Length: 142
Image (cartoon, rainbow, N blue to C red; front, side, top):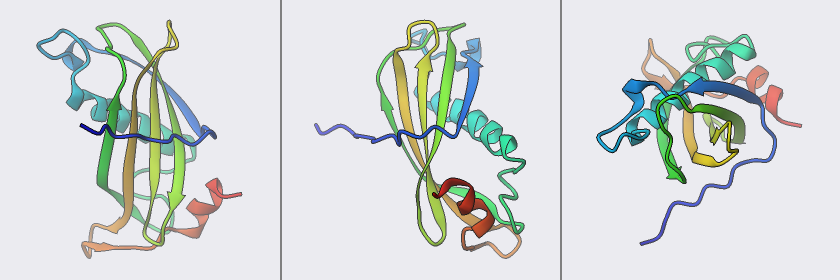
């Protein structure tokens, strides 16, 4: 079986630290696969907040909707573990961009998971896809 291979950009745009909560565990008593996306969601909200933005307005009243997600699990996480979540902006298209997250166990520096999400610019009033605001893409393109 072929595994997902994610290539995380080297430039880190934001770092969030989150603790694994008791509600983040599964029956195996380790970090549940569905909770990885919940932790990444919190990291994403903090990432946008760092730039004075929100998921409902990344510029020009443009909101976001997640189009896809890929997770590569690498190690277990347990209750109380502190995770460092590095967020990086990846490739842009006309209507969206990639966000990457590395979840790293703070005490051991071991990678717990890597995540790629495809974010699409969206207008929740008209229910239509929008273009990426230039003010947003300019923050991350050199």
